[in-house]
Each structure stands twice: as structure tokens, then as C-alpha cells.
Length: 110
Image 1 (tube, rainbow, N blue to C red):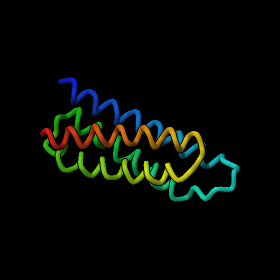
Image 2: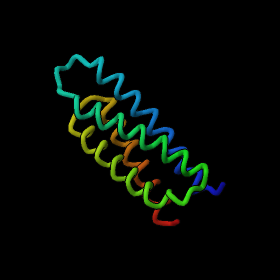
Image 3: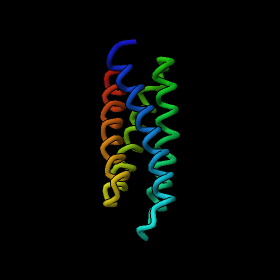
Image 4: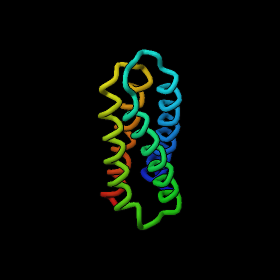
């Protein structure tokens, strides 16, 4: 597996893990912020990243179309997370941006 493919697969796994962590921490948050949309997008982003990682590992032809979709969903999640001052949300926003960059780059290179 070349370095670009490996980097994308790893970014997807990290993003899915951070999304799950954000969901957990958001549910426990007592700041009073409305985190419903953040939780929803984090779940969807995690699911998307896990599927993208599988497609990348299999070297599927679907990486092209799904990679662009995954990048878009990661960016939506990042934008929502950036709206919140919570540490876990800000961390996830950065992770999502990196994952989006990796997925888009791989999709466009394929």
C-alpha cells in the first residue's frame, strides 16, 4: 500500500475515533450548549470515515466518488464543531479537516 493510501486510511480511522469521542463527550457536556447537530454530524462522519477506510484498504474503484462525499461530510462536521468552544469539538474540527484533505486528495488522484 503506498504512502498516500495509507495516510488516508489512517486519517479515516483517527477521524472515526475522534467523532465517537466527541459524541460521548457532547452527551456528557453540562454547559447547556445545544449539541444535537454536532452529535448527529459526528455520528454520520464516523460512519462515513469507517466505510471510506474499508474502501481504501480494498483499493475499491468507489474511492473516487465516495472519497469526495466523505470529504464533504467531514467538512460539514468540522464547520459545526467549530461553532462550539468545547475542547473536544475544536479538536474534532481539526481532525475532520485533515481527514477531508486526505480523502479529497486520494479521490482526485485516483
